[in-house]
Image 1: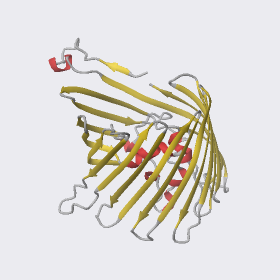
Image 2: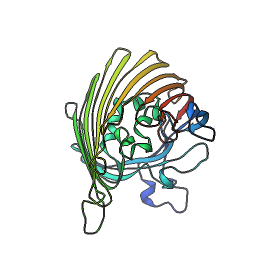
Image 3: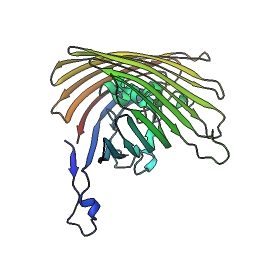
Image 4: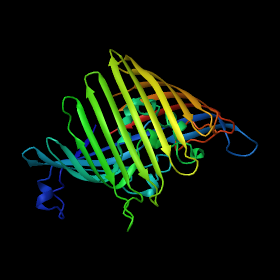
Length: 351
């Protein structure tokens, strides 16, 4: 349940403006569990199994504040401030930034919204069509794209979106199910407007049981010389108690070895009852430069204790012929020989 803060008018420091402010919503998410890896390169003596307490796997742990103010004539102001953290040690995420996940303020009307600050690019919206975000598999289905051993090109931007500082973002309202969005992030390098800049765009359709989206994100390096570009095309369809989803992505980088990766994913969730969801997803990644491909199968069972709390089990089975296998993005560990299975039991709570 979302918590609502009214202005604390009893406090001496409250102003008249605060006394008449619209509500501010506090929200958050807590995820924790145990993950068993079949094989890892951790420690001495070669590969060995490993059990870890991984947190923020189904979804990243967070706490946020958001609010709106009605300005009249269909115009409103809005803001979001959101911080990430790790549950096992209480540390701030995103390199210790206070509002490292998102921080922006903007104006909205009947056409759309414009905001400025720290945003996600539009690849984040393609999440809806991936196993990692369409189910509680989370990071267990993002590891194929997040291994640092892939020369920094095959990373979680392929699905999850990157955060863009100093950015301006436009998002239209939905018109007949169609919407568009655009983002531009300034590199803020004197004398070099291309250095560190980012742009992103998306066209989407969402109506009834059908949803689809196409997004492109283009990032320049700090010198403004090399470009990483990510494309994503995905869709989903709900028929009765089954929702099927599919996502195609492509990432290219024109630096060094000119690395490229093409990714294909298909999956489905079957709601066997109001409280139980069973899901499966299959991923395949092909690469250029004679780097061999990778495949992953992900199986998920989710039990809803309430609308806010669920327990879940995930099995991820990865075979990577080009790099050491790493099933879990960010918090996982690579194996030594390209094959890794991971089993996780976790609990997630929303507030």
